Amino acid sequence: MADVRVRFSPAPSGSLHVGSAHTALFNWLFARHHGGTFILRIEDTDITRSRAEWVDGIQTTMAWLGLDWDEGPVLQSTRFASYLAAADQLLASGDAYECYCTEDELKARNEAAKAAGRPPGYDGHCRDLAPDERAALAAEGRTASIRFRTPDHGVSTFHDLIRGDVSVEWAHIADFVIVRSGGTPLFFLANAVDDLEMAITHVIRGEDLLDSTHRVLALRAALGAPDRPVYAHLPLLVGADRAKLSKRHGAVALEDFHHDGYLAEAVLNYLAMLGWAPEDGREVLAPDQVVAGFDLERVTHSAAFFDHQKLDWMNGEHLRALAPDELETRARPFAVERFGASLDGGTFRGALRIGQERAVTLVALVGQMDFLFVDDADFAIEPDSWDRLVATDQVGTILDAVLAHLETCDWTVDAIDLRPVLQPLGVKPSKGLTAVYTAVEGRRAGLPLFDSIHLLGRERAVARVRGARDRLHRDA
RNA sequence: GCCCCCAUCGUCUAGCGGCCCAGGACGCUGCCCUUUCAAGGCGGUAACGGGGAUUCGAAUUCCCCUGGGGGCACCA
Image (cartoon, rainbow, N blue to C red; front, top):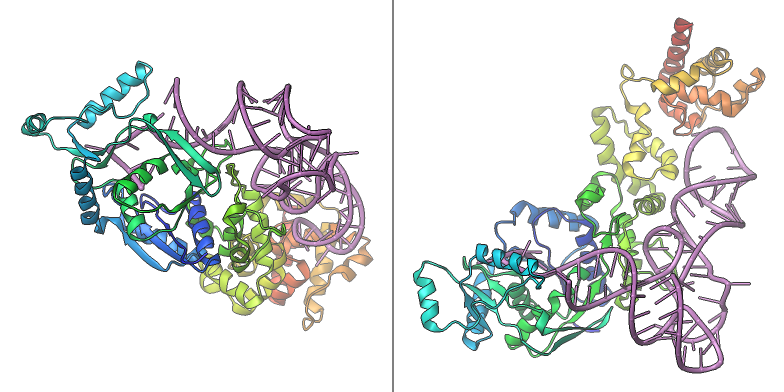
């Protein structure tokens, strides 16, 4: 497939949402798979809802995910002249007309229609006004919007790469506004004009836009387009209630996943698996592998549930696949944010080495090593863990023996093995060591103890075990 | 209300007429490994929404029903 040109065209009315990111990703995958061009177009024709900071945020987040674009960002707000010229052309050809109905009137008539059991949508009130009628309305001080005249009869059909032929009767599609009474163009117009001018070959977007395709295509034809792009409507992403994913379903802003310590390649991988599956069934893939195997015709038809649990698993898979240096590069910002100046490079690398195989996110990875970097004055055992330590059989004996060992043992080894200390006491390692985990790491479970003690250093390790032992005696 | 789209384990999916009394993955769960927690290894649990039709044969084709979702803005 040569000369593929696709675009991702978000409205900058918020930060990039996982549903939008899903659409962006599929466009990007398609473009990259076919060696085509991926264009970023910002659909900000509604200037009251758009904000420059969101335009920046969308780009930042796309860059984080690894979705690079070849052209743009093209802001539709800078192209109003083109859209308005197209509107004039449609007015001249009779495909569009001026509508003097006010928003309040439309709303009232719509509600009346619904109440009467008739379908909502424009009723054609200003469709065939005579010139003198228009002049009279304008004289009242009304400003006209411009509406596109849809056919009264017949059927609109287009072919969707994923869903096959999709048809609807024109009688069900009301005339729609393409230019606001304030003189600014609307989505349908800008979309049709830009897809035409940018020579978009494939339109890949969410299924929620399926019905609007008929209108865009009609506009496009009225504008004199000789052809149509290929359409592919993606399955929607839904929450636990099976409704379209939105803010009330929890974290849906893509930047949140970044901040929560998810790896971009894991998010990309997971998002790709929502609605698409590689032919060989392998699920954990690097971005270039997803690109290589991607095929729009293998995209599924039904809405997909965004499963955080599976994302967590997948993130762990990608985390464990990272080379040591790369892991350090990714984790360091999170560690710096959490520990600041107390972060020691050597200890950090050691902790990463033993933490990598058990963490789900970078945040969790850094979180489990906090006992190494917290100020010793601030170190505290979790209350619940302390209670259970106190209740442990022979806890005093265990801590005394461990303390004695830590003060005298050889510290030049790789890790401080405490099993020989416990053995003479007749304490089961798993049980006795839980008490030591609590004393050293502040909780009953965490990074491997023997390595952790070594990373902590003799002085600090001894201080922690002594602290626990002394507190035990005080309480007793 | 009208229109459109969709329908395989709890979830993501494989399956495009016989290879399927349905395969993989997440989750859950049993065992093993094990200094905790994980990770890992080996098992287990669990699905073709219902009814017709076509066919020698249907998860796969067609129709109806049911269910779910989306749309019907001077948002995109």
